[in-house]
Image (cartoon, rainbow, N blue to C red; front, side):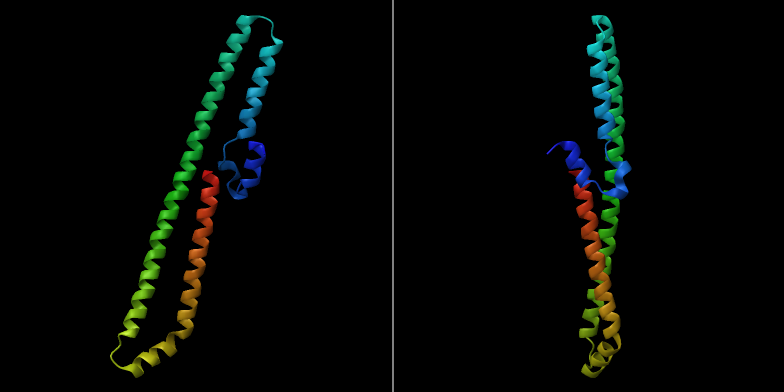
Length: 145
């Protein structure tokens, strides 16, 4: 499989502009090589090749900065989300522990009955948040690859 095909199939559509502009870089190289082979003067060829090379590597450097900056931002966001998830799960576990340690068993049962719906919503919410977090990490891993 060609790299361009692989890149196209693995690309996350909403991040399209954050990927390397592979096709632009490829066309720059092809255009530079066509010009080189059509010019007969060796000095012009060499000068042209140096100019194409300079522009190409400047463009590559800009692309590298763009890709690294985007990845770093998304990775920092993921770390922030992980911290928030850990806090949310910790809060949930603390509430459960406090309810289990209530001194009177009737009070425990009453609290449990009152919070059953709330607890189910909290569990679903946390479960959904963890799945979304996992999905975002998978997208980021695909971007990295």
